[in-house]
Image (cartoon, rainbow over the protein chains, first blue to last red):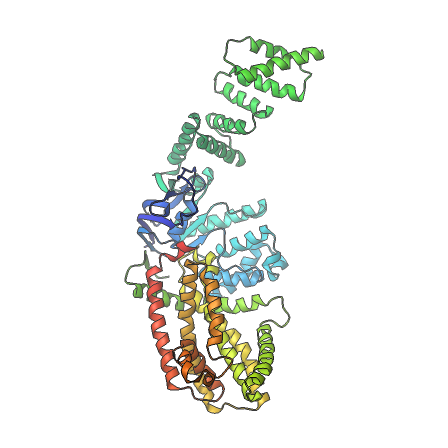
Length: 363
Length: 274
């Protein structure tokens, strides 16, 4: 019976604190630094159990402990407190391929890496043709890995790692699989591999991927499990917690809202308006004069039936006028806005007055 | 595939933990035998004469040292050439166990951090690599023996148990050096300096008699000397003294016990030292 049990496991890294100057500051990401005991707690009091058929997704921002969790489950980091019990063969698909050597040819590396991953030489040789064909390396397979492009390297690593048939499969996200054509093939292969494995644990930023593949998700924050449940519920919780934090002008929340919205955008999904609103607020902090973004922000507010503040509209018009001063209707609108009762910061007001006067002089 | 439960941190006393890892490392023999072999191939991939570079540099060294020191020490040149050749081959093997052993765990990082891997296998791979290079050096040994016209006779068979003893010692030496240097990175430099100095206080270039009665203890109580001695003597056609066999065996037992205890005790801490 394949299973994976984690009982109150901690992962703590010993550190030398001599180089740390001043008081400990709170960081946005990463584990907690305990200067008294000279350790960084990467994972804190983790408990869960996975049985056959379980597909677990690990969520959380960068540095929340996703990769460390995979390494804990793989047995690479034995828990410093608590216990880990695993029954079944484990295979990992991380970014680094164990045993890879730059001076070896692709074919030689397939053998060394395959051996490291637990295949026998016989198995590798019998699968060799299939693997090389899948990796699409052509004649490059007999050339040193040193001269491979990064895409070829990933294809090689991916092809060997997916040739193993594990009972417990641990995947790290961001398996950049090169071009779109290969990415599609890789996905098919991966789905096939996932279907054959009894237990899957996958760490990812991609909500759609987790929602599609997993039946359970863990949300990690600062090395702690903050929630545990079905992916849909968890994704909603995660998203609303991010929006909530962003509304409070929390810089971390704003940034995560931005990342979340960009992630959805990257997958061709439309971000919900409230999320996009917070994401744009973050982007506008970085580029306060970007006319396109100001316009989009105003639209997002309008679409939600929210009031567009006069200050925002003035900034938007100023940005447009900066690029194209020959817009009389904009100047008129600016004058109207200046007479409105709303509070407008002095610097913005000054710039607006200047802009409307300057354009009058030009006429 | 048999379903076997793995419990971490590994339960049991340090020796039980270490022993289980040793068994696992032996089970992984195909992995490290292949890795060691291909490593030697890869390291010399872009050179023309490959691992024989080692042999060539050894030959050049023997030639220079042989000429200069045989004159300085007023030794019979033929006998001295043989002595220095075999000494350097044997010393090179032992020194590589220790000096290069300092890096074996550090170099295994990508493997060690992506799965539960028995670290002892890194030591096996290292010792195996050392043996492969020794094989290349033996070509030079045969060459010198033929040239100076000496056959070691049947005594050479004693080299087999001697080599086995050396290899067994090599496993604990490289594993211990690897563990120590993973924890304290400064130690690698320290150990390589210490080995350089050890080469001069161990009778490698000169016969032990040169120490005289007052300094003889420097060799008598030097385990490295006895390790060199047990393999050097049979290769030169002499029977190694019983003392040296006892010393080498004792070194193996004591060294292994210390290493296994250290290894077993720190097994689950090792990945955190990367």
